Structures are given as C-alpha cells and as structure tokens.
Image (cartoon, rainbow, N blue to C red):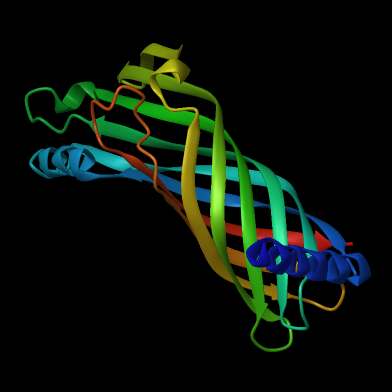
Length: 222
C-alpha cells in the first residue's frame, strides 16, 4: 500500500509539472550514415579485405524526417519523444580489377535498403546556454526492406533489379540513441547523434547483424 501511495504521489507530481510546463513542438530532418555490424558481418569484412580492393562494403547514406514534442521536467532537463521516417541499410559493391578482364569494366553490387519508423524517447539535459546532450531508448519499426542487385559491363547495365525482402527481417528493432545538440534562440536547432541497435536484424537468426546509424540533422522548435 505504501509503495502504491508513493508511486501515485510521484506520478501526480510529474503530471502537475507537465501541466504547468511550456510544452513545445518541432520538426527535424537530416542525413543518415548507416551500416550493419556484428560477428557474422566481420567475416564478410575480412573476406572483402582479401580481394585487393576490387570489392568493398559501404555504409548506406539515407535521410530521416519527423517531429518531436519537448516536455520540460525541470530547469535543466526535458523529456522529448519523437516520431520519424528513417532510411537505413548496407551495401556491397565491386569493380573487378582483374588484369585479364579489366578492359571490360565489369562492376557488380548488392544493396539492402530499409525504411523504418523511428520512435525515440529522449531525456535531454542542458549543459550551457543552447548546448545540450540527449540519450534514451528507441523503437524502430521496419516498414519495408528491399535488395537491389546490379551488374554492368562497359558502362552498360545488364541487370538491375529490386527484390522485396521485408519478411526476412524482424519488424521491430530496439536500440539506444544519444548525441549532442544546440538550440538557438530563434527556434533553429542542430544535433548529431548515434543509434546503436540492440536487436538482431535477421528474423531467422541465421546471422548476427545490428543497425548502426550516425545522424546529423537540423530542426525547428515552434
């Protein structure tokens, strides 16, 4: 009974603070620099290193766009849930630099392109005027995933096809997110952060791979 009373008092205090707080809303958009990491992915990286440069793994450059609500908790801290569309993925590209066929200019590649809905739940803390840090859990829901494969010779595309592979991946990716931000007096804000996925991407657990994303964005608080 005492625990219930204590929790009730705490929850009531938060509700009172939120009710009197100056809640603000904003929009945010920016670039994603994503890749996959994991023990199984390291095997691929090691094999790629043995190809003398004609094959390489690359991160996927994408973007994110969405909105957020900032709820002050105290003078220094605020709670900031958000909702955003985010494009992530992984790619394996190559130019076959083998002397016997180099003149043919053969190139090939495979790229996984994933479309997520990110739901970050940040706790934001002010350091000095304008400057702040933020961190918290993030739930990412996979909307669609496609595999784009291509093959070209002498600059001519012989094969370029996208295949829907959404069902091969887990629909929910739980992770942690955090970074550094700066809020200007005119409402404009900048931030740079990192998303660290904790859930295995493969639905069938055939390989251990996780999302890693660097995000750089600009936003506006109304």
